[in-house]
Length: 493
Image 1 (spheres, rainbow, N blue to C red):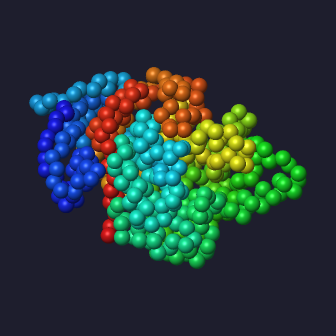
Image 2: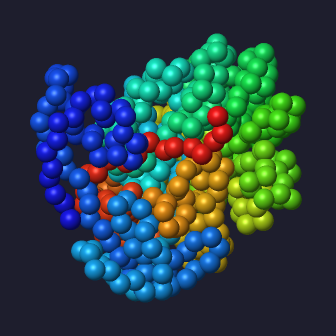
Image 3: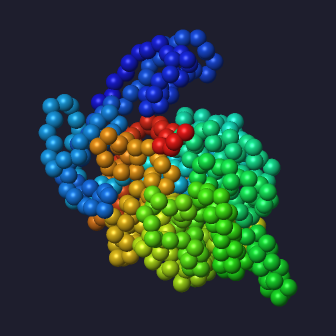
């Protein structure tokens, strides 16, 4: 039930409130006044019971009633009867999974808002069942100090309907700024290092910088691993052979297996030397898989690895059809790599599934191959891609939930999210495995307005998405505008 309350609130009082209460007060501050003011605050207080739903959680599928009250999972039982006012949601024949936690997205704000904004892409994320995201620092200006990081948190606080965190970036020149994150380990998801070519000044190839950051970081370091010199050498070899470099089919030749492997092994050697908590993003090659283990449970790993949905879905054979639309870094490679990635995901050498959502405008993607930017929009359709894999018999629902929901929460120590557990925040997704979803211009929510899946029909659908107990997406439409929360990390000081 929605209700309106009136309150006198000032900045000092807001800052003393618990974070979950502060999230209700986002509408309090005005543009100009700093004195006490009278405001109408809309509080989302509707509670729900999802009846007779198949709950996919912690390796099992069980039929339950799920009671969502005051933003959290209040009860999860076979049958729930309550006296207070609640709204019943019919879960008969449907499946309830935790909200996905996407540990790698590029929402382009600030500085690149012609491509995307935190607001637009968060809406697309929630429509795709992603209730929490961790966003990357390669924006303009890049997120290389705490001040710029806080600016992004403030944008998200006022515009993102999804829960959120942001990585601090590392450059060759910002060691001291980057390591300030050690004082904020409960409030920031981690450090991001581009150990390969990147935009602006974010390529980190100074060994002194790398040694210092790997030695002194007390939080997780996430890396993009492609060796820049190998990429340059491959490009020069093609030119020397008088090969016309005019199509994305050459992308996996230029950004090849060796470039990924050499960079990944370098990062792992640094991490082992300094006992660093290392997380290597978007593994794309069969060869790299020998660098990771399944001999330990995730909670005991110091080195973890992520695979992205597009590397599980596309292969180099698809460049002829999609061209620059699937140009991304690291490149989508030959089919044997895709098959090896699936195998490693299922046997736990790969720990997390993410999207690496990276939108560009249609016009930018139509440029000649070497000028077209790398990256593609995926966050609205990543879960549907995985569910298509389920329909094809590649992966179980339990494994999807483990890798896209539980594992990101464990890997990053996200507090009270990633599971359907009593007392946890009620981030969850209701899915229909028998209803289809067609992708068209009208249904695409990315600001860039396109998707490589336009015209494709997925064999399943996302019926509802709950964020902090609020239904924000329902049967193809956004139904509320309650803002998400800043993620909190359960780490020792």
